[in-house]
Length: 231
Length: 250
Image (cartoon, rainbow over all chains, first blue to last red; front, side, top):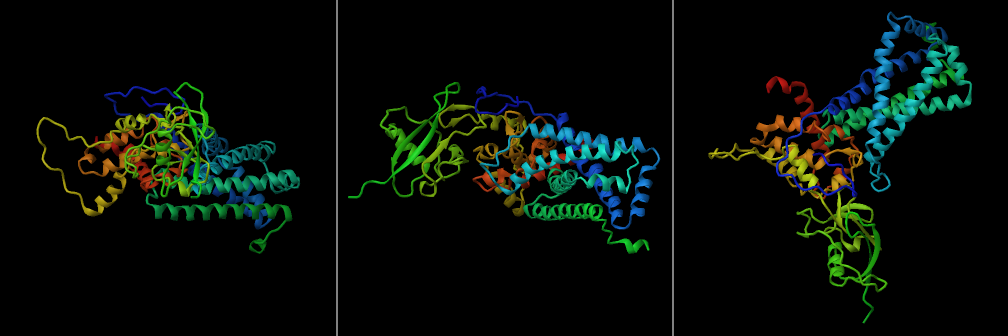
């Protein structure tokens, strides 16, 4: 019998024969949760930052890239399978996992424990941000968002702040998520391997944050450092 | 003669599982190199609170007094650790003693940690050698492997890793780092490895390895310095490979 643990739990008599535990679905669901964070969500995040980086080249290139993506065959099923369903699953299952934990940062304020708490809060911020972001840039624009829609959104200082917070939260969540993945899938086992994985994952997180903020700057200041590519 | 130095010890007391907890303060005469257990022994000898009230002796568990039995784990000044290695001179006063919160409370500082042993059984953390005839000596283990296994085998089932784990609580049945470490230890053993598949199946069961979310407090709290996060990740790898390929070989 897996005993629920707490100081208030009843003391159970010790069982003489304990049957071996057998795998249950939670293992698979947890593994799917951890995988969807990398593929397809992380992969889509990479694609998303890549495509939005066209704003750093020119308005035309950005609109061209947007149009190309908006006119892919099987658009809605592809969006649903590769983005919406994994994202909803990852978000809601993440909240379920959160509900099974009880943070104790005030007592044990170690680095990884900070990451544990931050991963949950950034995940929630990211989930809310992405929900709003998809609503504004995908549904309000009827799936035909272009450069000037984004400029209009970002001209509101409140929305701009939300974008900056959203990008930072997503980047942190993805970077730390990569490290989590390397632990949960046993890719980095030893203490040194874990440290190295943390550096790599941290660097990727920082890279995403920097690129994301540069893209925002590009929209806000109409800044196109790579414009000479298009000339 | 100078006035004897005293130390203040505040203890969270509870007469039984269903009683309401209360705090009592004791003043104990300081002696050199005292640990928390020494304070508790003094209090047991003379159970009078610092304001002169007679009370019952404080119940606690302790045995080896050298951090090898695991019995005396408790929450000292807000952190879970062994009372025997908690030296009074290194602690902020008044010293606050509380029972561990992740196990059913028996009385005062005594908690019932038998769930750990039960979980070790559920996860098949032993080497089965009993049979109807002698099966002879087991295979020899290379020194490099012995070195790794020895570190893992130092676990004393004190429960500190469970106490500090955010994923061990009443909403989750995570078995905790100690048990996952046992799975790794017995899978490393050449005879134990014959039952690795059974263990790796069990560790994917309710409260298994999937519940670990790498807050990694366990490895900081472990009084034996066991590389618990390494064990977690290693068992994660083994369990994953077993879940993908296990059915082919079994």
